[in-house]
Image (cartoon, rainbow, N blue to C red):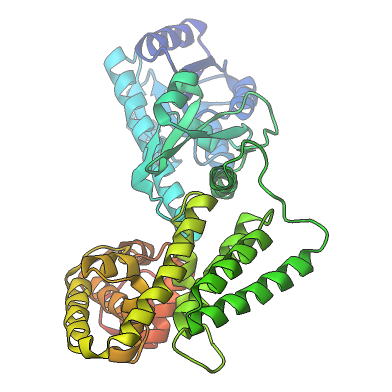
Amino acid sequence: MKICVVDDESEVRVSIIQKLTALFPHEQVFNAEFGYEALKRIELIQPDLVFLDIRMPEFDGLNILQRIHEKYPAIHVVIISGYDDFEYARRALTLGATGFLLKPADRGELSDIVLKVKGMLVQTFIKELDQLMSVTPIPHVSIEQVQPFNVSLWFDEREWKQIELGNRAALLDQYNNSHDILLTLTLDSDLEAIVLRAPLEESASGFRERKAFLPALQSQMRMKRELRFFQINDAPPSGKRAGQKEWANQAAKHRQIIIQHARTGEISELEMGLNAWFECLTNVTYDELRKECAYLMAVLDEGLSRNNMIMVDEETLYYWHEWIGRHYTWEVLKDRIRHMVINGVRALKNLDQQDREIPQAVNWFKQALQVIENSNEKNLSLEVVSEAVNVHPVTLSRMFKQQMGITFVRYLTRRRMKHASALLLNTRKKVNEISEDIGYADYAYFRSLFKKEFGYSPSEFRKNNGILTEPDESE
């Protein structure tokens, strides 16, 4: 926190500065002189709080207060006067002063003012960051995961701030000067962030303006997760290689071979097709790989029981894209895809060969429906439900199409939209909070699904049901 003291009496300034320094040794307290010089120093320092005398030569305190309020409305100003004059206090408060103290200000009064302003700064910081998060959401990250330190850094957009990712305790130990730390933030179970004053301007992982924070954070998270996914220590594959279109064509060719052998149940050929497809994905970017893998799984989910052209709907593709994103490394993802595809085809062959056990299949399918209806798990998945009833996910997916006439993904989406409608009617939660609660990290996509299901956006749905609320940020 930066504090300026303005008074035409040097002894008064020094006294206030000494008291403030003794009370708050980690804060920056500046002697800003008085009059026009004070205005120059305030503009240079851009403090969070100014203690300002009223009666001064050159330029009185009320005029300085008015100039500060017009140019720097975020700066808190507390008037200190030796005159017990209600009119001065009234005018000061009208012009935007945070408070009014009589000289000589004692330590207790100064302490109360500083603590009050620090609390106001934190509240403003939290409100601004929460608004930015509603416009630029980061999946699974909310304002509750933020721990503020020196929020003065947030408001000074001349300062470069940098973002470091890793273990919070280790990062705090490395950067042990809390004055240089803006905030810490929990991103997931094994990844945390610290934001601090950048030692070098124009830091590659840094930002200056507040609106640039979340894009910079997303960029750093993306890099960190790609390095972890590919298990490398330097830059991930760029994907900008010769033959970019060629690899995509080859991937599509191998995908068709996989689908063909999955339908016919030729396991050895299916394994060779998967290996060739995996090889084709070497050195592509994380986004390209995730998109290609999600598309294969969506096609297999939609197409194993069909002989005509396969049409993948948006919901199924989104489901499998999120499923791919839950695997931290490429080796783990490859093993999981092999298991889902090869063992899934084996399970379907067994199901087709055992028609006499259809009543038994219907029985465990009913159990699966009960698991879905009774679950409060926001990340409920095909694998979770299939494990609960002890069948392979692909078998459960086939039974959904046979018994319900729709896919597992579509059934789950309808249930989630029904849950969302109840939350909209019975809680005051924001749309992005409800989206997160029911399992959609991308709440813009959630809104499109909700409107598709009910014909109204979430805010319109509330309004039509007599609930007055502010429109969603992006509506």
